Length: 491
Image (cartoon, one colour):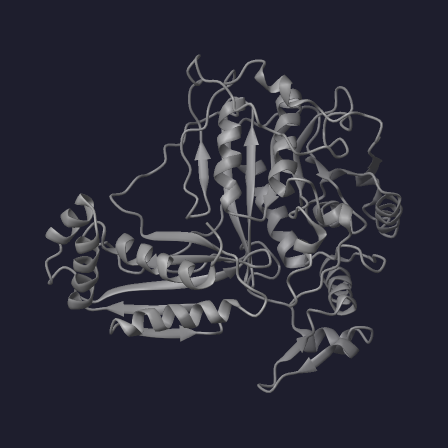
């Protein structure tokens, strides 16, 4: 199934098949139907029903009632465990659905019509198997290694007898050693290579011939992960799956995981922390996928930091993945990414499109202090453009700033850049007649990442960029200003 194409200038949103895409949860309505949820709902000054996102009991009860009302599922987790948000997790499920229904790689579901998935680290909440089975009738194996996760995952499965036969909860044997990264140097590039990726659009498709014979892998791949087995040693001999999925431990320390004072979704050390963070964890999945190869049609994982995407795709290029895809998951002001790859031969070749200049750019703003918020950054964006005389309007509801710059303002920016700069800047300035630069319109949006990190995205809102380089120069200057103000001490 194809998803709706996003119009230029429109923010990424939930998957169109997500129940909450056009109908977000109505807290007032839920409170009227569920007396256990009502105590957590209050009304703000504008009359809107809200909950306290820093209250674990409130977020857990919201997840429970949404799963019950919208999916017919009985569900609970003990105090302190990671509490998933249903709309966000549904986005991931529907992306997997898109991958399985695409014709990029051949369908190999021999002797079965039902898709079968593997949930790495299913946790006490068992959210992906429950959603996948209830929404789409998929079969699942959910793995974990802690007693509390295995106990409550089993309870959540057995509490839903209408789908319980579709889900197996599997214990990870801690005595099995994790796979060695040395095995990755066996035959790099045997099955193909990654050739291109567009991270700013939240999309990438990479298909191509085998890499050159002289190409060698980075020797440091996978170093840093020393935890329990992930796929190798857990997947049984001869087992075949259509996909695996994972919500990896995003953080390197429990202190880093607890920096965001605005939300409380719980989470234990085992669920949220891994030496080397998500990069090390997903790298181990890549290592395991090299050994298991075509045991899965698709290997996938969620990614919390956009900066890790390029590193991970580079590693996939090295180990010989035939296809790599990425996507962007947006829920409210929180942004995550998905990465997927396969070792199956591609059934068709996708050629990425290239234009003279991108109409969107982005960067990570890291190192924010506790007292600094996304709204503070937006105010700085608005002030930056207003100080140069541009029309600048902050929309606090959608966390964006709409900007209109005149020809004189654009030329002033480029002139300053040229005086500071490079031959490329001079060439841009020489090709910027005023009549072409009249009324440049752009939008700057801010997305919440992990605590202390924001994603800043710039979109050029006109059909065509009148002069190559203008938008890039303006956005790069904004990046320097924001990093100078908010990322002090970050190199």
